[in-house]
Amino acid sequence: MSKQNVSTFTASKSAGKLYFSLISGVKMPQICSICEKSAYYMAESGVKGALSAVQSGIFGEIRSIIGRHEEKKVLQRCVDSERAEFVAIYGRRRIGKTFLVKQFFESSFDFYTTGVYQVSRSEQLKNWQKQLLKYSKQRRNTPKDWFEAFDQLQEYLQSLKKERFVVFIDELPWLDTPKSNFLKALEMFWNSWGSDCNRLKLIVCGSATTWMINKLLGDKGGLHNRVTMPICLSPFTLHETSQYLTYMGFDWSDMEVIETYMVLGGVPYYLSLLSPSLSLRQNIDNLFFKRNAVLKTEYDFLFNSLYSEAQAYKKVVELLSSKMIGMTRSEMMSNLKLLDNGFFSIVLDNLEKCDFIRHYQSFGKRRNEALYQLTDMFTLFFVRFVKNYNGMDENAWSHLPDGKRNAWQGYAYEQVCIHHINQIKKALGISGIASDVCSWTKKGENGAQIDLVIDRSDRVIDLCEIKYCDRPFEIKKDYADWLKERRDIFRENVRTSKTLHLTMITPFGLAKGKYESCVQGCVTAADLFQ
Image (cartoon, rainbow, N blue to C red):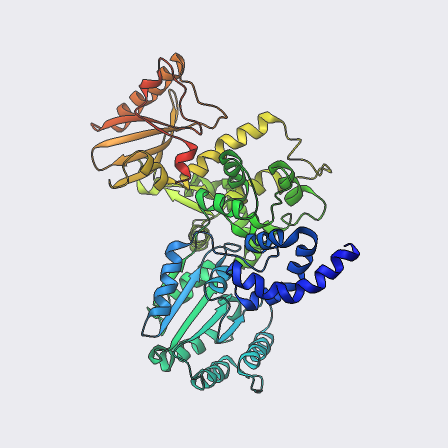
């Protein structure tokens, strides 16, 4: 910084607080916390430049919630409610649960604590006591167990002279260490006092989705049906991903956003690691292939933090990654050499609850022939390209042959579409029509496969072909004949009298041509962003 700008910097520190507060709409406490940064920026870039930087969030402290409209409505109902509320927010790791709560309440909690991964009950209790001291300003003995810990919390909350108080306990499952009686203590706290205290708004979060669903939401004991507002936080849609990247300073096309989604899914934390100064390929190299890349160890940590027997879960997803259309339960057990026992059912159920896999019926198949498919975009990419990569090329993704990348993107685009079924139905004008969504496969001679089948209650079936390409797709005679042949094979095999519509899902739509009219519907990439 120049000498002249040093003096500007000094003056800006005092004047900047009031100035930014008045014209940026940012609250004074936030302005004070970023004063040093904003003043420096003002000295170097001028007042307008600094103001722009503050409003755009360049300093990091000022951030807003992207999307999450329904979730914010639920939290607002919690705030406005005249009764005690018990809100449970769950979803896979890195999805933004903590960020949502802290931003919505502007971190204005009357008590906040978080569970710590893989530490003892005594360490968890010490952390609880430390947080209680921070909020109550009253020194207490470290509680000997969770019953005493919640008693101390209740005593403190009862002393508050407020219309409402917000308690936020993050990573709740990690507090439930073996033989800790944490759940019983929480049950006692809520049932004996909390549920009758209309001022109390208790919010809990957990990344261990199976724990949240099975032990909290699915509790058969004293916590049964005690959660008043459950919130399942899902990954961003393409539209929300685009909004987030724009907010973070990216100027990427829809296709670049889609290709980002193919690798990172709609997981906010992963998206936050991208740099707008780099291309997408450079970003992927940095995140996965550089030495000490930040996401190189994410896969193992993700599963280890969610499941006590993580290796068994990883074996299932790694097997499913090798069969794009999916596998039946019996096929998986045969490949993994497992017995058909209760543990395997638990593994599949937990993976599905955490949104790593889905199971669906292939059209016309019996229930026991349901297919399981790996659908988590990050896991799919990692297992395919990163997990077993032992090369030294730190630019491995940039140097990947186009043929391999194109083959991958073709399949990944199908998965992106499966994540956006509602948008596809809207584009086809059938949002209000009840329908079942599946795929269809015929094995053997004259075999055929249809990527997406939408079986509608108005006696129409959409047979969707998903095609990923970088220009309007041209339907030529041989392709038109192939589409019609598959339609006829489908009708013959499933013996349906419903009307069959051929539908194309392709990023840039269809090129004008003689055979364009052989399809009855077309969905573009722009439609997926709606």
